[in-house]
Length: 59
Image (cartoon, rainbow, N blue to C red):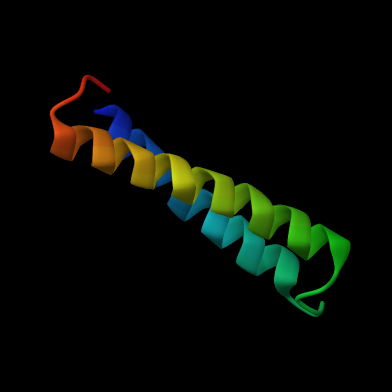
């Protein structure tokens, strides 16, 4: 499994986790915000990997 595939799997897991945490809470709940921020970090890493691939860099 490539790094890109692993990151995509992790994103899906974090997204599911965030949705579970969100149940019955507002989007401004600290726990929901923390899960959302963690997801954002991994989405940015995934984007960076794609950019590196397009530039032909090792990843």
